[in-house]
Image (cartoon, rainbow, N blue to C red; front, side):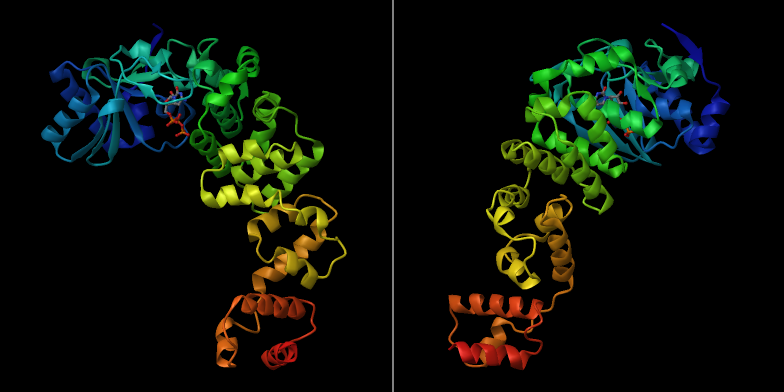
Length: 402
Ligand code: CTP
């Protein structure tokens, strides 16, 4: 193994003195139990890059949950554990995630792993990219020793995202999304072998569950790089695999507009792709909620073909009143002949205050029934077109009808 050491002072200046001496205390305690313990993964990457880190992740050779419980007994605090993953969170001075070294084993491609005890080397070898596959030991005698078997530090210098073995993406196709995300975040590029393997992932991509794919898209969106991420994923053949065809330039402009106008959401991007290559079934597969499934269904309503781009706002409202405002906004960014009308309509709809409600009709003595809905819609349309402007005019219009 390629061992270098990091000086305790370097760890102290990154983590702060207090956290660093806390880590030293944990390391000394682990020595007594003869448990090898390491800082690991993204945390080590961020330490070398001097980028802020979120959590403290420790990995132990041995039983991570038992170790977390022993720490809590010795130093106080509480432990939440996930037995099936061999992971625990120890809440003390700060939350520390403690994981059992494992040699990941996939029951089903893209699904969650089951745990087998393993050495630190096996644990590092199962990881996604060399920059995420380094560890720093914190046991007293080895405090600061770096384990970097896969030349992760060199990859940080080269600004490369590099997989550890050729089947990495087949084993876990969500890594394509991770590769793109880390690349965009750190301004790194995928190494040529990594690109080569990524583009060969093929059908394994279909094994990513809807939930995990959407999580990955949310992570890209949260980092503000959803559009760029979608583009790079296209270069890696992700969308041609999932949708069966390329997205047109118009679909890409649609996505760019969506991002620019705040519909910066994986579901809308998927929908833009699906509408473009008429694969609503793919969008449905990745729609997680009932509301999202409804959005997908709304895109196949005839109104998008039938509504004239020259229609008035009132005429548009007659057709669109029951359609969710998200889908109206979605199409208003689609560069369709209809889009300018939809944009004006969407804007009006957000500020719209109806002149009449059902309660007004009851008060005026009308018998409630389905006709109420019709009247109220009609009043809204007339109001939008400026034909009536007051409650009295609205009531007069209804009186004339009856
Ligand atoms: N990991 C992996 N394969 C995955 C997911 C995670 O090998 N599909 C490993 C990587 O070593 C990663 C670590 O698990 O560093 C932790 O995963 P995660 O918290 O998702 O990644 P971080 O690198 O910590 O990312 P972030 O900076 O976004 O928190």
